[in-house]
Length: 583
Image: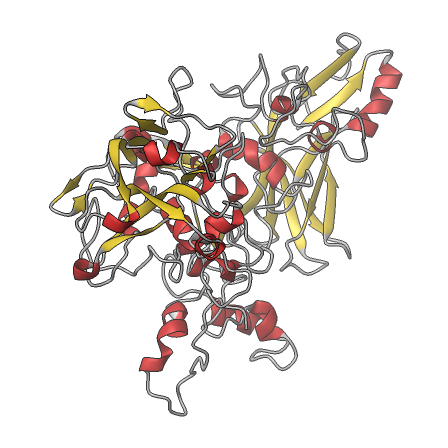
């Protein structure tokens, strides 16, 4: 947490402390913050979850560095579910931990570690102090005015925090401290999780990843409870990437790295929705090899031939190949959703990506829209995805256009560059489209369906859960293990149709009829007005709810109910579109 002071006089400084103080940063779904007052007390504020009623009683406990209790109080939330508490006077330069629990519960639901700053030490004309470290924070890292710039219209206002930076940017200071960072990336909190949670816990106006999710959310919530049998991706650094089921359990490369928010998201921007990384586990550093029709999973393809669409290889020569075709008419263009949305002119020659569709005897190459990654991250090196003619790289021109995000390039009518391309080195990533609804990933009957986006989402998840990406359920697949699997390398069975990305618990799970807590407790619902009964019904019975959207095996019944006898005891789904599809 941070506070601003102006050093014209002590009186003015103390006055401005109240005006400019900003919430402490916490890993909390409850907007928990602790802000120092001029008398060396701290004002603690928080707000109950969407599932908490007004008048819920919480307990706030203050502990010193030896874990001894300094003070403890019960706080009842008001009609807006907000709660406040002020600590006793604390010792300057001492560290304290302020904890929040539900009354009569032992689980800590929020906490903040603070160091008490010396308010009599007015340094310079303008000083900023970080109360978790007591270091000066000269570039105002973490200040709400810096990150949001609400209501301002000058050239510094409304700058993007995550990517697309202006040349006069001050956005770096949103997360980094030049000389007083808490970790080796100069982040203002120790680690990616604490840094991200500082804004994304609901205290700064950014998306609250701990709150109840919006309808059709892909992410779910980190704010589940043990009572609701929650399961979450452990992004706080307690596990390594190698812990991912279906992945590589060795210390090799990215597998041995700490798993955090930055394992999935790129804080500096991305070509993918929600700043998702295009290559989370570093597969583009491994050259693709096929042995006995088994892949090593590599996404780097060096000096590969370009094939004509009329002469596709009948056997697997690589998980991805580049294919040339001429789209002679507008109908040819419109037949490919990605050519159409990028305005490829009729008469163009296109070089696009195809992938091997592993389906046993039916296996073949099919069209794909995977991202071409421009660079493997080596800033000193050249662009790593290149198209060549007779060994000479062909860069983009006004008439030879690269569409990196959708994995193709084309020559406009009259340009011959694409026809001359004979070899290519390319890196394949995953780029997930922004969609308006969850079902746009997999429901081909939806008017807003984005073709191939469900596949791209599955590819993204499979960067770490590698073996779970499969084009077939009738063949044993996997890089690190083999088994029969759900056909996840299709839009229809994309990972996010069954699972949340961040986490889940009974408060957001559904049954096989897509009924959630709100629907079940509504008038006329199965448990009208009885929240406790509905939560008990939705609580997953398994030790881990595995990030599922649906309780227990309800997700199975949602799709496979047609194979079950329809009698008076069967709660049949009745809809072949379930689960997850708009009705």
